Structures are given as C-alpha cells and as structure tokens.
Length: 239
Image 1 (cartoon, rainbow, N blue to C red):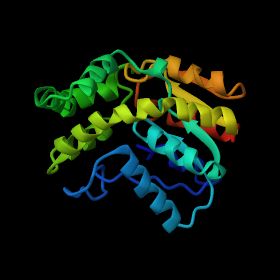
Image 2: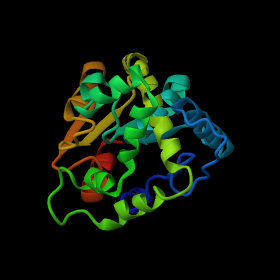
Image 3: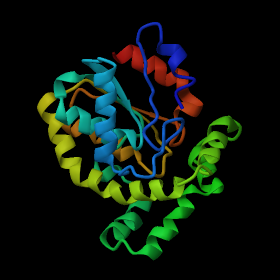
Image 4: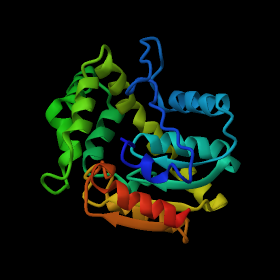
C-alpha cells in the first residue's frame, strides 16, 4: 500500500509499515485473538522492540482504531497524525455500516456467513476502483490482496475483526476526547469518493481540532493508489 508513498518521504523520515498480525506478510496464527485491542497490543510491543519513543502516524481504515488506541494510551509519543480515510466519527461511517450495526446487535451464524462475501475478488476490486477514474489504479494492489484471501483461515480472522469493529465505534467518543485534550497536529487527507468512510468523517476532525488540515481528493478508499505524490506533498508541507 505504501510502496509509492515511501520514496517521497524517505529523505526526511524513517518509515516503518508493518503488516498487522493476520495481514500481508505477517504471521496469521490460528490461536490468536483477532481483536483491535490485541492488534494494538502487538503494535505497541513492536514499537517498544524497535525502541521508537515518538513518531508520526499514518492511519488508514483498520489502522485508525489501532493508531488512536496507541495515541490515547501514550499521547506523549505522538508527534502528528495523518488520517487517510481513517475514521473516528460516527458521521464518517458510510451506508454499509448500518447493516453491520444490525449484525453487531444480533451476531447470528447466518449473518456471519454472509459477511464472508466481503472477501470475494469482485468486492476487493470494487474497494480499490470505486470512486476512481478509469485506468488510474494499477492492478497489482488488489491482485495481491485477492491472493491473500486464499491463505488458510483468512475468512475466519477477518470475520472476527468485522464483528469486533463495534468496539471501535464504542471508543469514538474517547478518541475524540483525546483529540480535544491533546490537540495533536493532524492532516486529514481523504479520497472523497470513498463509500465506506465518507468525507464527513474528515471534516469532523475540525470539530475537535480547529487547526486540523482537511484535504479531499477526487479518488476512492485507497487514495494512495492514485494520489501518492499529492498526499506526500501535503504531508511534507504540513509536518
């Protein structure tokens, strides 16, 4: 995901982009509890192992609730935040989340099974292509993501995280309280055509951080696939 962004930033920043447990090239143990609290705990241990006392964090999608858990726990470690379609506001949740809220309230096996379609190749391609101009998204990103869906246990661990996402929504008020209290420097740069995390979530940062910079780009959920250089320029100009 960050393959096109890192070269623009590496002269000024030392960048790490670890895959969460169960994602990408990280291990995917079957006896692991796939919750956002647990992913946060592992990420915190990684930062400690690498002896990183403070950092700027780039949060996107599932990375936002992990990043904001870290920030809330150790606010002094956060030098600044880039939120790229990384939501912490109820008003930023797109229409699909209403259906997921029904699932969270009544988590039947039948509904859980329905969410396995969230990992179908057509769905993943749609996540990459919706809201983008034709021919602007390289197929390598979604092709790799589709390949990962075929790894053992993928559907189960991702279904666990879909159900656990309810804990993130419950924490939104605390994430917002962190923003109000500590006033971190923040750049919200979002693909404005994202149907999962809609632009209202980006604008909402201004409610708690009057000095936040909000930029909406004419692209979709995976904004780095089409606008890596623009996002890099915004990061370098802001931080």
